[in-house]
Structures are given as structure tokens and as C-alpha cells.
Image (cartoon, rainbow, N blue to C red; front, side, top):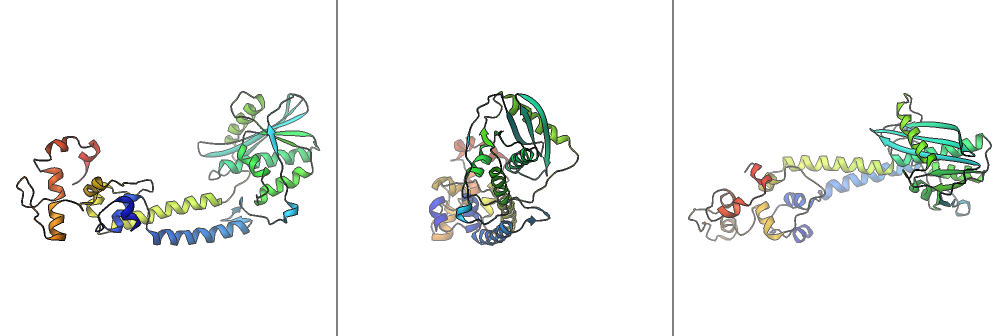
Length: 322
């Protein structure tokens, strides 16, 4: 009944058609895939390796007393001391990152990082900061600034609720140093940030992938949503119900929502049409124009009374296979 109330259709309209009008996949398919997603996410949280790759979302349980928040500030460049800029990007389906080290305003070192093409930008931003901190530890640079334009990464490092192992490792390494995390606005003319951005684009030319992560929790959810759409489309294609609605909507969509009482009578052929009223309530089924049976096809395509309205049809409707 909720779909009837939302779409304002007649109660005789099939569930298959209602789901397409509302953009709501069949519940049995949704439940089936939600169960599978829950199983996969449970595995992702526990396993270091997922689908043959390093697992970005693997979690590490910590006691509350061991959790720590590392804050960050807005960019303040003095041009002195150690400043390390990081950047990550995804261009032409390639995921790349870099960091560049400045000492007293002079570039001294840099690193290019390439991830697997299916990895998310957030992953590579985290990797860039992680590698920059590792670099500081390896070079025994205790007092430095790590500057990034990825606020989402800084928020993750700051959060005491964060459980992902890769973020926890960053926090553990930060404890060993006096690194100050800073956020800089991207493409704002800051020399170090622009240089890191150029280097991350250059990393796309690397033949070898440095690190490749398996699908994240978000990617698993998105992948299963695509699978849900595929299964729903197959069901709609094979459905013997809603044949008239199928003439308008051959493809299912999650974003669709038609809730107009009058419009949906046309889209479903269930409404104040003579043929429908005769079939359900044994009323007169003739059309005022004299046609023996007032079907929706007749009203839309042939009825002389509807001629003027027919001229105002959306152009896309003229291409429908009625």
C-alpha cells in the first residue's frame, strides 16, 4: 500500500509497474543483496587481504584509553623549516599521488605513488600522507609540517571513532614525531600544493603500481547496487505485468518518482478510461467521440476530442512504440 499512496495510482496497478514509477527495487531483491553486502562488509572489517589485495578498510580494535585525536590547522607557511606537501588525484581512470619536501623554501626531495585504477581518491590521499610521515621518520625529521588539500583525510586522522588500521598506523607514527598537520585549499596558487599536484599527475606515467587495495566498503555497496539494478531490470524485462507502463519506461531507475494521480493514469492505463471502467465495474466503455471502446491507446493516438492535447505532447513521447 505505501507505493499506492506515494504514486497515487489505482489499487489495481501491478507492483511491478508501481516499483518502476517510484524508482523502488523489489524488496525481496533488496533484502537478498543487503544480506550479501552485510556478509562482505563483515569480512572486510576483519581481513587484511580482500579479493586478493591489501584491504584498506581492515579495522583494528583499540581500547578507549589508547585512542588519540591528532588535530590540524589551516595552512600557515613560514617558508622556513621542513614542509611536506601531499596530493592525490584520479585522472583518466588512473589513481596517483605524490609528496614533495621543501626545506627553507627550496625543494629537496619528492616521491610519486601510483595505486590501482579501481581505487578511490580518498585511499590515495591517505597513502600520500602515510608515505610523507614515513619519510619524515626515515630521514629523522621530527619537526615538520605535512600539508594536504584533503580535508576528509585530516578529519579521519582527527576522529577518535576511526577504526581503519591504515589510519591507526598513521596516528601511531605521528606519536613518534612532532609533525603538524595543515590543510591548504587546492588550486589556490600555493607553490608547494601546485607542485605536489603536478607530480601526482606525473605519477600516471609510472608503469608499476606501488600499492593496490581491494574494494572498500563503499565500493562493495555501490557494486551491489549495480547488481540490484541488473536483477531488477531482468525481472522487469521478463514481467508479464505492467506492459503498458513498459512502453514508457523500458529501463528501471532508482531516481524515478512519478506521483501525479492524473499523469499516472496515462502511464498505467488504469484510470477513468471507458475500457478500464467497463472491465472492472461493467460500466459503459464507449468513447464520447463515437468509438465503441475508449482505450488509452485510442485517447492518445486516435480520438478526435484529444487532438489539440496530442499536439502538445513532449517530443520524446512521439518516439514511443505504442
